[in-house]
Length: 294
Image 1 (cartoon, one colour):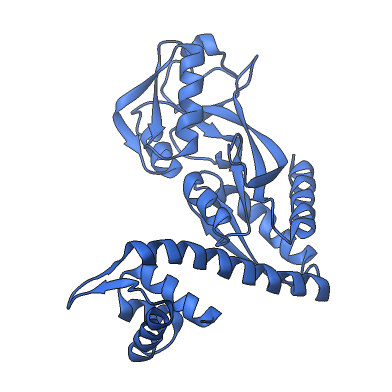
Image 2 (tube, rainbow, N blue to C red):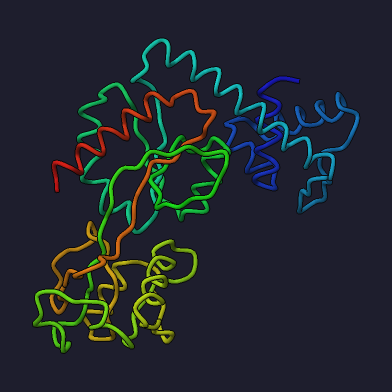
């Protein structure tokens, strides 16, 4: 049994198909199937149930795959330790961010990060918060920019910045001529929100509860850009994160007075990560960049 066999095993479990697993592992299907058979012979238990059309993992296989993931992650940690001693600021790193932040913030900071860390190959992953948390824990992503709080004992975090929300409303709305709005101004108003699964939806619902506003239940958007277009079409108003504000015909953005709604973004990574020093440097550089931009 070796790391290659464990990689094959996990690939079959993830893909549920020997052919697709072989493609992922860049080997022929007969070669991969043969190694899985050898692994089953070595362990003395079947790992998969095979039919002409499907591959189902056995209970023994499920438990062994779970341990295989741990072994593969530890092997990757060993490689990362060696890389960090050769050059702490070099190598590959996968950085995640959620959809209501990634397309608006990352273009502002990634070029500067590339310039500051020229030997670092930075790859970006955009997913919803719960997906990114699982990817960090599984070692598929090194770190991710997420809105706090994230309750996960396996993760450490460093705060990056606080981003205020503005009220985005149609240009023909009764409040559009104001220079700012208060919570009282939107009491009993209905707000357009994102669909389930977006952390911004949770944050906006908290604001609705706080000010006595309500959700427009007739429409839920899949993205901030859809929300922006719905506001421009005079369907309703919404909360827009500061970094996502951009000019759009028919849309007016107003800042809040008083207790301004906001979200705090932090860089989350595994407590066991061997690249904590690098991640801390990245966090510090992002803080500096946002501070300069502000």
